[in-house]
Amino acid sequence: MPKRTAAHRGRYKAKSTRKVEMPTLLRRALAQLRGDPPQSWPNALRAEQPAPGAPYGPELYGPAYPFPTLALPILLPGLSTEATKQPLRQMLTRLQSADIANAWKTLDARCAARKPWPTDAGLEVLLALIEALVPINLLDSSFAKKGITRIKESARELASLLEAFASAGAPLHGIMPMRPTELPGIAEFASTLDAMAARGGATFAPRGGCAELLSNAPPAPSATLDRALRNPDVLLALLRSLAERELGHTPQRRGSIAQRQALTIARRLQPLTGAATATAIANATTGARITTKALTKKGN
Image (tube, rainbow, N blue to C red; front, side, top):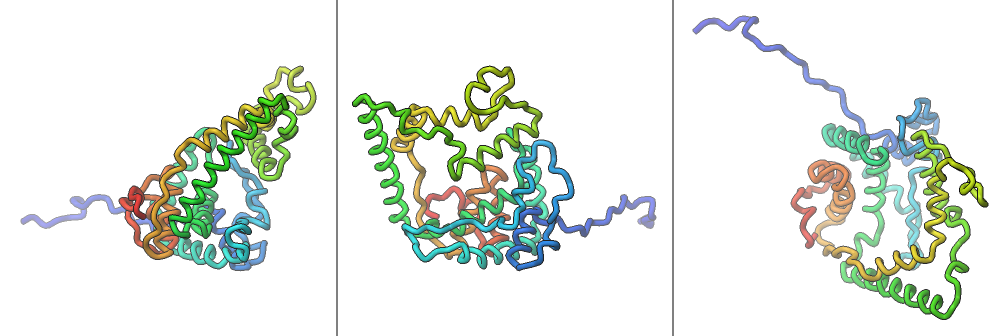
């Protein structure tokens, strides 16, 4: 047998040892949770410019982020934001040391390709983690079913009352807010829409009065949203939809807390990343061992 020489050998390519880090926003959240000084937070000054069309700015990395408001005074009066910090820190610590480079690459690629605008990969995961920490996701399934029934009944009753109010001759426009996008919870979303469109090169007509009608420039997204939310027909249509449509099945609460949290995270990420990547991130976050098949079972 002829001796094998160097010429017969294929090209040698050293395997990269560079670790793919978890998204910046998650690393920043972990630094905040550890109590690291602000100067050491990843991307503390946001020196680089966001990518064109990126739906985030300096406000996403503010000093109060990422702690969620999870106070549910009706269901759990004693719950506070402080109760979420320790489990969130544990989740992010696991993620930072997890060997899931392919999952991070897939997540980054899917977020960058998201239409109509790209999204922040760290924000998508953080929202999934927060959802897994909401206590209602761990409550008994019968309690959750009763809650869904109450929501639908309340929506149906409110729609009926509004229709009766209108049929009596009362103008529904009179009960609609004049500036819906200035209401708490909507104002931030409306300003984000404006910022997204502005980064896309759109020009806006001034808001207020008849300025938008007299200008040839397209209206700001928030102005369009204002007009839609001032329309009583929109409100009634949303209420009827909520009262009539199926709000989804209520899965039984099986398995350990870690498994339940992993399923919540994976189900939240699956539409964006696919089942395999969502499951990898969920397992790395919680230490559980769920499978991709578990995501399609109604009994979990």
